[in-house]
Image (cartoon, rainbow, N blue to C red; front, side):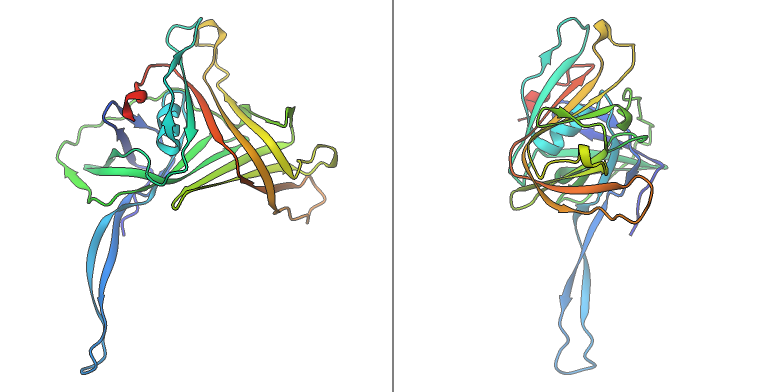
Length: 290
């Protein structure tokens, strides 16, 4: 098995656009299965098997940027409303997205460049995703990718990576639960699996403070990430927001074995709607993808 790491460049291609994505890790590889044949009654009793390529598997972990956030959330969640121009700015657009309770979201192609090797992964789709937010780290999105088609070798070895804009940081993410802002949350992990229906969980890492502990049932939580840069027009900065409704506490994973501040994770099941809004510095035309 070849695991492709940090010296790769990645490009996502849909019918409407082609975009480079920054990344921290990626392990896209060919999926392999075995055609097994049971041992015959006669003979030495050995089983035989034939190696069979069954498509593509693996994942991409990429930091969210102002330019890539609309596309990556779109691939993860499965639907997007028509982009709305943000008044008072020169070229900022807001995208609203909803998660769909469907296994099969939009298909796309992915180009991987590793050293002098280029490969095209065809008809990929996202079967699960994780949004990871933690203080002092970049906000990252993990896309679990699958495809039934074999990768294709490409002859062109031209370098294609281009800058994708500023990255969102966990230091500038705020959390509002049932209308109240919580300052003791250090990060979250939003996990959604899209096989046999969408199943979504939210892990919240919070400092253990009795007066600011989280409720067992959450009507609504809004997660907002901002880019605090001054380069955008009209004091409008890049943002993304995710709204989750009807969460109930599944388990408390906190282990209290220290006299210092305890950072404990709470595990919530999301039984309601999940939606997102992102703001991009250009019109990507993703509405036409559906």
